[in-house]
Image (cartoon, rainbow, N blue to C red):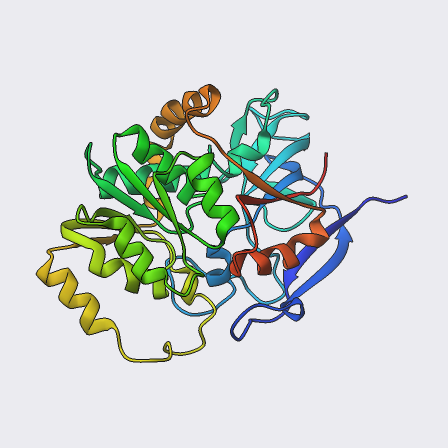
Length: 340
């Protein structure tokens, strides 16, 4: 049988939450590598919240995915054929080839991995972009000090779980915020957080304030926004730092949020408490990736950093898994196993 390249393209731009109608699974011929190129076979695909922004044509820090183009995404691939110096068939690489089985690359945005890497998918998570985001945002912007309190939303996710564990290693008290009792138990019993508050509970804001206590919160790692940010503001200490890498609660909005304008309350807190709020995009920190990898790799190997993956099977499962990610249905870093 002739091998085909399955790929999932953006069929239309979503209005609000993405649906299956916004994606289309196609089969096309497997591309052939030309001079100075190599053919990559996707083994693992990363699914991440930022992809929702790339489905929109609103101005952003990077161009959107075009309609009828392959959905973007980080991948771990095997080199199938190579006409490129430095790469041979069988090599494992970290690439950005998107939601498809095969792709041709000239090595742009490609990093070679250890062929014998025990968990290649970790290059998309704890040893990749999410782990790097947690490391850089917390240590460079949050600057946690021993004895301070660090709070993190999406506490059991790909970024939040690493943020909290690094904060504990730095001698901080850590409060996680997660959706559901099971995730909160995991944060405290497995990840070692001091406390975790369920944002789905009716008394969420009060419980969070009680948990923060008189000590308050010195660093809040923000990747959610919405009602979680509203509940955090009264708990922040003067001089608190807020690294901001995402606002997943707002990604599916088609207009301004319902209810009163919270901007004056937020800005008053920024002014009166002298808060430091800094947004960051991890692309800007790429020169520091080797430094991160040098420190994070032994932490993972020794068990100082615990990491959990949520694995979807097969490329065709990507749209449903991605929609679940935006609703908080995943438990850990969400990856798709595309091939062995």
